[in-house]
Length: 414
Ligand code: RAT
Ligand code: ZN
Image (cartoon, rainbow, N blue to C red; front, side, top):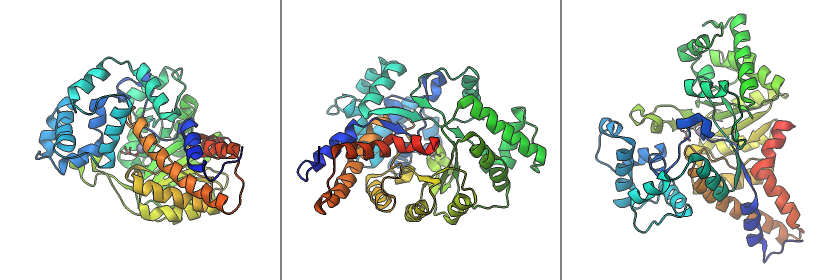
């Protein structure tokens, strides 16, 4: 059935809402990972994005804040950002959207009442509810093979909720090999040395293959500082070239690079203390050109790098641009980036991931992003209709299915 100018906006909205989503980067975990799976109102309110905002308004020292219990921290953040001020930042608005869509009464602003609601739920039933509200089909976790708790779960097999897919995250291996990575590998039984001898490189390849076999990850991933370069005369450069890229090819497990984070700009803020800076995107050009048989997912943290990344995407089919990461995950910037990407890359992108750390965040992160994706698509298809193009509803369904899931699967399989 052709879409008309009159029903275009409503049709795009309906199709976007109806499309089950594959969320390709989150920090969520399946229930067997126990305390690593965060959910509920206290977790929502103490999300690290909100901690940073609280210190700008509350009269409390870092030491005093970190000495509080989780419940006390949530009380302070709620009082500061929701009661004494209106919660209009994106992170605050997210809490409001999530609680509202879960059916809680926002008129009384009673945190203890919200706590009661969550106290009666099991993680399993809450997962079903949240996935259904957000219309999320699958989430990709961020799995750290160096984490003791995670390792014990993986050692017990992967027979858990199939909606949770793995991603092998290797930050310590690439970004801190000398400081911590080497020691962690040795502790895991891998014969590695500081000089990265041929034996050590073979052992690192064995480590990566072992974890690929254990986790069946959708991809391997790393976050990278703005100084990241490729090629690079460093432990990272050597491990990347000699270990990560060949193993990625051998197992057809793409490599995801998340570029531009400056860790611990303010260490007092702990997880909330990271910042960003513009990176030199020629590293992405080089790695894609020199490794045409490798597949790369790339997202960048600096707004200034977004346009360059789109242009590089035009040059290299082995690069899949994805998501509006972290400080980019705000409506004004999501809108700008999504338009830019669609104008330069058409439908060959993955416009968004949630980065949810708390299960309930899937509700708001996807609701807010879907509204923007809908607006951008309605504009773009509207331009086509105005120029005389005929658009079938099935074509719209096909395109949206690609953006919200199939592009990811096809890129991995292809
Ligand atoms: O968005 C976040 O929560 C950040 O703290 C990071 O986890 C980031 O997304 C990352 O994956 O490194
Ligand atoms: Zn993340």
